[in-house]
Length: 182
Image 1 (cartoon, rainbow, N blue to C red):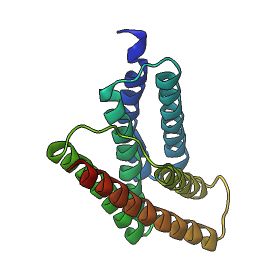
Image 2: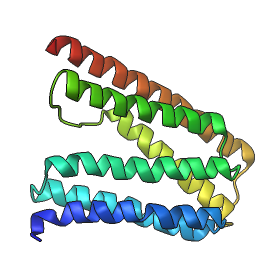
Image 3: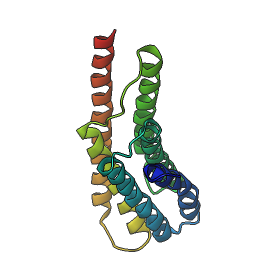
Image 4: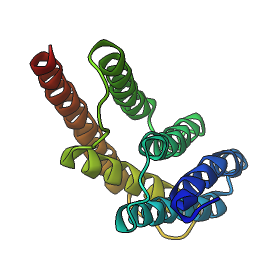
């Protein structure tokens, strides 16, 4: 192992945080699930910082990092929908967007060529809003604080709108790139 491997090792550890998070949610131990979710979020920031600061970037890291994030976030959304803590329509929209992004990336790779994964500004904001929604839901159900139902519902609608806008942005920008490359 070399120092340049540290960001990828942190990313692998984030993959390993998914099962405990889901098990804790299944047991409705929201506060502990929130703790692991928060540690995973911090690890994402740390591996990103290290990769950029010390130029420890790699192609595999550029692919694994967003996959680890999506696996944690999407599986958490699925579990929260299963438990009745989030509406199914929101989770379907989020999963559909992520599926479109992955399918588009795979299609671009095989039909046009290699590309660099670089999330757009709206995509970063969408992911941030999704993470904040999960944190709110876990904190409220963990009894850490109270929020009126309308606050959570409004947050869900905002996340839906951002998710849809981000999905359309990906389709538009990557479609344009594909046409320019053809």
